[in-house]
Image (cartoon, rainbow, N blue to C red; front, side, top):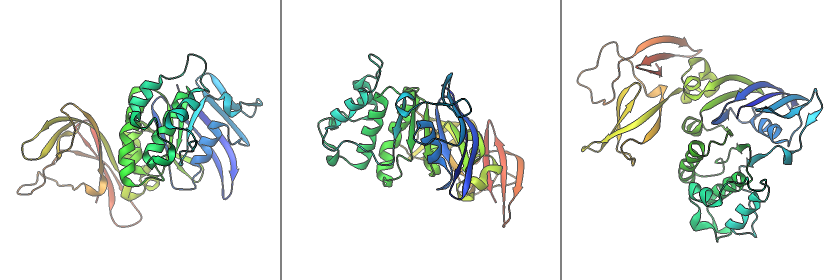
Length: 328
């Protein structure tokens, strides 16, 4: 399913004026706090009515202000996961999940056992929300939303209230949902680590406008997008496959840029991973370095140099089939 969004709406301090398409997969709305990201997902959900706009999910028109079409939230068939889980405190986990299933058309709801397995919450079914960790509550909230059989899933900074340990706990489950369910997701975040790991498409927003949109790897490695991302966040995302666990405590990965070595990670041979390489962690040399301890040395070709306002520059390189950024 492809989601098409076009909105114009006045907000305090600026006007939301944007258009973008979210293809199948996980589309991340990324930008600083106050950029208008939550307003966009609320408009898709039907919780905010823009002054002008059109929202289409495949052939279904959810909103068209010019034609007087504005489906109410319960007819849009979207699942919404907020920053806080918003579970019913008096119900068990199982009962919270079944509440979501109540809104699915007869015979069309997702299989409860499968969702419980995908989210790893089988051991939690008899508990109440007060006995769950923050990460567990969010997993239950995601399961409840999916069981309502939505045509898309909206997630508004679902990890923002969690500490790093709880975020690390829930990210693999979000990856499984993205890869195994095939449910389109619109994901709001201002955490680049989440976007780089989860997103298949990125929409960069600044003050109510889209500054860049496209496949994650292309957007994150584009020097022109570095201002919107923040120089410290600029870098590249590479798909990798675990090739071997070496005897010296290293894991060898195969990437489109060439082989790379990491401190040993807990992953089976053949597992597919994403690597995020920050531009500030890349050094350049005009000839292959000798007598250095660096393990990861790749031949590359300079494609573009972008000079900033301050000292230094961003360099875009191609290494094999991949694009890498260096900040020098």
